[in-house]
Amino acid sequence: MVREDILGGLISALLRGESLRHAMISMHNAGYDKKEIEWAARTLQMQGYQQIEQPKKPLKVKKQIPKPMPGKITKIVSAYAEEPSKEQLLIPESIKVDFRTAIKGKGVINKEKSKGDRAIDLGPDVKNADTEADSIMEPRASRYEPEAQRKPGKSIIIVLIMILVSLLGILALVFLFKEDIIIFFNNLFG
Image (tube, helix red, strand yellow):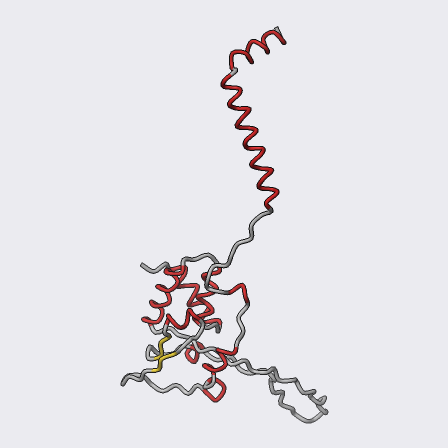
């Protein structure tokens, strides 16, 4: 059974523009089980959710607009690109990711056409998304394999072990000489 929190996290990441592979890595780094993440990703693909990596558009430098002269009507054009709609971000079931290679870092996409699929114009910037995805450098903390954890200093461990052994020794002596300790405190305070 698919955990809904993992499934919701993957869907949310896809709608924000992340690739499925990066979403899976983020979920794994958050502490979720690798098998549960893969199961949720497979379920997503069966439902037809898959997101195209959006090409990074360079920001347009906003040109200075001349001050309007009295009596003339001027049209101000926005210098920002329009956001793509959610419908443009989702791809039909015919495009699927091979999980074995996506997890290893290759991100191979198999494109199979079926009769019921309609053609989606991806535009010139998105057609090269496969080659651009391989060139994106991942941060070292986002590896899918577990990294070696830092070990605390050996001196701290040695000191704590010595304290533990001494406390256990004192406890053993209290049980062995219980009657003598009681007599000593009775004579001391009695």
